[in-house]
Image (cartoon, rainbow, N blue to C red):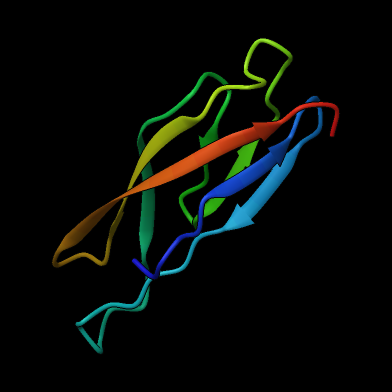
Length: 88
């Protein structure tokens, strides 16, 4: 999984980010992403698009999400720090 910066999300707006990874297996062509844990409403597509629309109850708090990616042979896990921005 390539480095993921701390994400600042706008409150009451749909935010998204495409996560990226590189496989050590040169024949791996399909990386599959999974959301292991995260704040309420955070989603991650199988192709790596992270989406969240933090509500007012989420504002002011930092949240951690845990994601994984699998190339068919092996998998990697990473934490993503999310910080809602009030009034965004």
